[in-house]
Length: 69
Image (cartoon, rainbow, N blue to C red; front, side):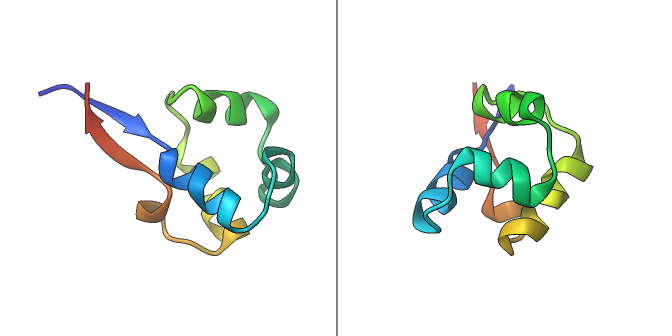
């Protein structure tokens, strides 16, 4: 089975925390190109994902999941 990454959990957390994507870029110290990859469900390096987790005080499994293609 082929899998793909989904960051839908991240977007829901941002809504719950009343944060914009720009707020996330600033607080996590990630680039706009990283955010663009996240928005498209692309591959993002783990250090960027960990920065996001630290910035919004969540665990990795709270922001990313694998789904079948």
